[in-house]
Every structure is written in C-alpha cells, then in structure tokens.
Image (cartoon, rainbow, N blue to C red; front, side):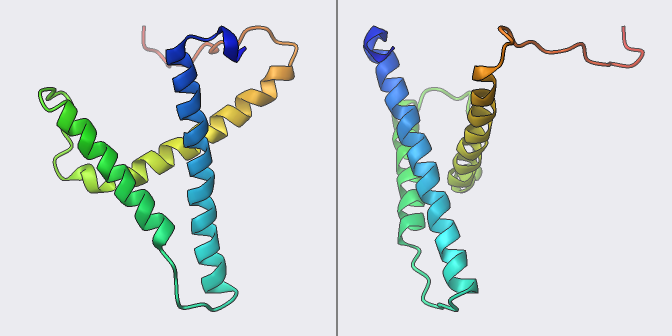
Length: 123
C-alpha cells in the first residue's frame, strides 16, 4: 500500500513509525532504570537517554514556536516544561489504541460505530 501513498502520506507514516519506536525506547529506558535500582541495587543511575529525550522534545517545541510565533491560539505559559511528559503519555496511549484496533482488523464486523449513549433525561 505504501507505493500508492502520496509523499506527504509517506512522510506521515514514517513519522508515526519513528514515534512508536521512540516510545518503546523511552519505556525501555524507564524500565531499565527501575529494574537496576530495585533488583540490582545500582545507585549509579544513567539518565542519559531520558535527558536526551527531554532535551530533544523541548528543542523541537522551541523550533515550532519559533516558526509559528504569530499564532497565539496555543498558549502554554509555564506548562512547556511538562510537554515531554505529555507527548510520552499521548504516544503511549496511542500505542494501546492502535493495538486494540488491530485486534478488530480480523473481526467479521465491517464498520465500527458509537452506540447510543445514555444521556438520562436530557432532550
């Protein structure tokens, strides 16, 4: 299916693949730190990967703010220090959603739809 995609769609697919890869790598680094600290009793914790991820995320955010400085619809104020944690949580949640949707790839159901939600007595 990839040869039928436009160049923009190919770059988007490549971006998504890299995003999934770094979520696995960051998760592995976090697991490794906890494993070494708890089970091996290693007090020399190497935070290199996590600091690199945090710095790269803030660097990319800084470039995006630099290129889009006229757009004022996104205001983070002092929350920009938490953005790497937000991005990590977002992509981790995205992996869960993709794997749960992948399960339904082999179902006999052709269409997915929201069911009727119960809104009580609201009309």
